[in-house]
Image 1 (cartoon, rainbow, N blue to C red):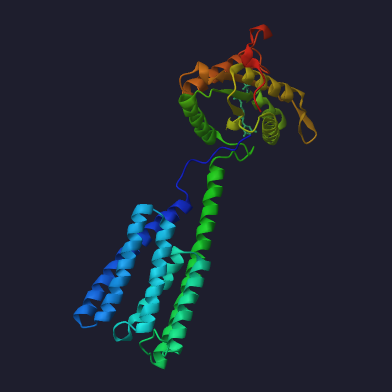
Image 2 (tube, rainbow, N blue to C red; image 1 turned 135 degrees about the vertical axis):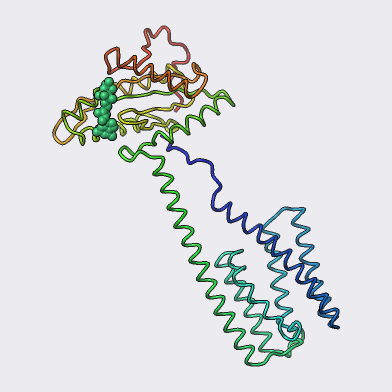
Length: 369
Ligand SMILES: Nc1nc2c(ncn2[C@@H]2O[C@H](COP(=O)(O)OP(=O)(O)OP(=O)(O)O)[C@@H](O)[C@H]2O)c(=O)[nH]1
């Protein structure tokens, strides 16, 4: 038997993906503006070479963005942007930027990096950048290094960036942990809101939603379905004569029989009190009547026990098919009328009653399992 399906919802993964998409786009735009702006300022203050380098990086970011506009591949856009930014930091470490302040831009990197990637990839990229800074700081005579930093700057820069990276790692780790705990909680609340506590079967809410889904499937593609409304007979007497706990125990035992008898694609739910509803997809009225009768027989043959007492449990049920109704509400009304009729006719029976096997057609073939 299927469990009731959760409503279609925007998943947390989708939400994360959407955020990282937006952030990458914004970062690309901001980086582009900054590079163009600072490049122009450098040009005006006579640092032509530096300006050209910054504009080159701006052009690379613009090309990366244009490729994204055509291909719409977010991963590629993000990886491209991060690669450009890492090379840009390499350039800033090696050239010092203006007045050796270039490396200071690196402080903005760790929080964004962890958010955009994941802890493992973020750590690898940060370690690569820091190793690159260390090499450049340590060997200023390397061919592409055009500046030198004071010992104080090097020590303070590296230790403070290390501290910041560690802090960002811990924050991101805690954020991810809290997020997965919240998701777990949301999932279990969603499950609880759709499950009957006593029997563990889906509840009325879950069944109602599934009925609407099944009805729109029927309207779309003609997949018919039937329902059976089942009520435990003289249940008040069971409560009165054997106690409320005995009543609860018989509801649970009946729910187990329902689980046993219905197939994977069916749904059996507690509709309320001592009423249960079976939803039987791709099942004709006659097939549904046969199944309901089988369940009735099984209940009649089963010994319902509570402590050392045997409880007199029988069921009545009304059955109806969507092919005889024009809405879910109408179907539920019909099945209720049938249940009433089964009760009126003496209980421990199914309605409508099939008079003769001769009247049964090809529809009475066994249900596909
Ligand atoms: N133990 C127990 N009893 C319940 C629960 N929910 C509803 N009931 C009882 O079920 C009984 C239903 O009684 P009625 O509606 O009069 O129906 P009935 O005695 O089954 O009689 P018929 O349906 O006409 O055969 C009431 O006494 C409710 O209190 C439950 O979760 N546990």
